[in-house]
Length: 237
Image (tube, rainbow, N blue to C red; front, side, top):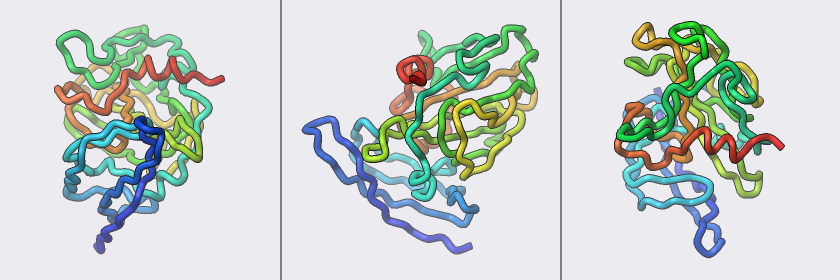
């Protein structure tokens, strides 16, 4: 398989001074279908840590199977708002069993369960939280099970602000990388990672788009945001 090294420039809007800055990234693009999803040895890109409105870039940012190709990003249109990924628009008949960063536990997302408890929500639908494009839909193995990842633009065409949504422990994925989805469309069903847990949806939101999948509990929380707070601040008009 022929691998191509692509050098691209991404324009980001800096907080300080209100000026544009250019960030040059080296992306390793493999022959993994139209979406160009990288599924090879991670490529480490050491850059200075910088937080901007549209994207968070971490020092020694690792591009792995979650990397987002330029072909995906150019297809991501501005959203009209965000809803919850279960029981939309307001998570009806679901409750948040475990939230984002509870005390003494660096939980990087939220765990959503059906109000019936146990496995009563096994097979329930999972919905796209906002308009966006799927860039990853694979069985990640271990305690993750099937994982779906989407990228969204909550800015404008001129000044995009990207954020990622991640849906884990999915029983079945109804989408493929490259699919453009609308808010509230079904993307999969709730699972239990092959019986490791009671059925629930592990849901993350990341401004560090494409960051590698790591443990659901981690000391490094850079680039992760509180999903409920973000959704409530960006509801459809």
